[in-house]
Length: 236
Image (cartoon, rainbow, N blue to C red):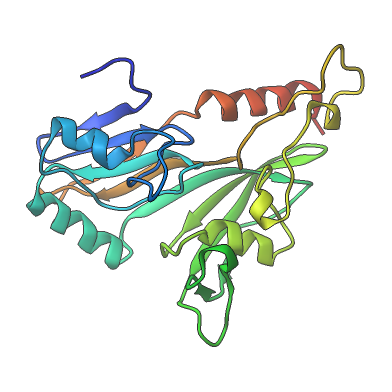
């Protein structure tokens, strides 16, 4: 396989693989535009029958499960439907957000892409657990565990708690700047990250033989650098 492609295979069997999707790579081909080869197109160059078992947002990085054949796809998607796949995300949020295994159970309306929102009348069930991993002076590292898979679920549920993922301009955050955490800057004030800071950290599911599989992914460079700068300049 091409070593120039940014997609990294984390774990692979004869039936499926888990990749670490880079940020700004779409899961599916984009309509009316082309910013990068989609995960689906990439996977079918190597496995013609490959099917994505789920999707993550274009800007979100991390674990994505791909079936190599229809049998594996059916096996995996049933687990997503029955909510037996454990998904954990890490997010860097604006401000100090202290969540101790906070359980959010609020329905989400995803009918309009630009207006995804909490909707207790017409929304579909959505549940997410949030837990604070580390508090900084101006930011928070969170673990997010969605039980359902609604579009923008983590982002919308966080917004319902007056919390925002750093850099998530759609949900009222801004691109964070180095000057937020460092007083003296020589030269231009740089961005701490240029996308919303959300990473799909791990997936846990049942293999076709019934064994339980857990796959973890490393942070991409931009997310890792953001945290490194927080550790250096924003310790509480």
